[in-house]
Length: 227
Image (cartoon, rainbow, N blue to C red; front, side, top):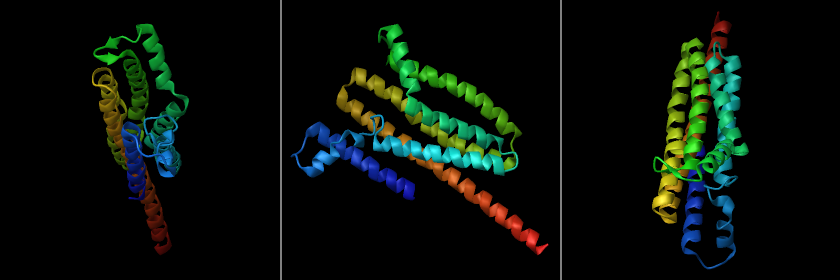
């Protein structure tokens, strides 16, 4: 609940920032603070974005730990790799760079109603998802039943995250081309909500898996003492 409460606070500040930027306000210390671009969740290196990817990086580190400590925890190692790649992509802007190359080659024309740069970004993630998905499937099949259950929960959270990070992101690009900046800002805000909330959900799932592992180890130790 603490993670989701932090999300709600940051998203509220983001909303206030957008309103002030769109309609303006009397200049004072408070409005100057809220108009700082670090509160705009659609910007790279914003507070919202950094908070979200800190959660993913934390989830990745915990999953690496679980993959080594838990018997046949192979799927957790792949999930850790997936979340680290997602974090690295944000820092190094891989999909943005691929989108820019695709846009240059297409002269920024529309492709299936979407800007070329957006299609390039989606193609990049489709290729990455195919490779990592194959690796995850192999690891999932070789993992223990407990690990497979946890992996399924992580899959659910990641799919929902992708709906916003990829699906709504594509919609926002189309909206920008067809409906203008206000509609675009609303769509991007919805995208930001979904991304941040499901990053938190993923970390919550990982924390719960870690708690279950520790509880199981403690139970085994207690049984050893009794015997």
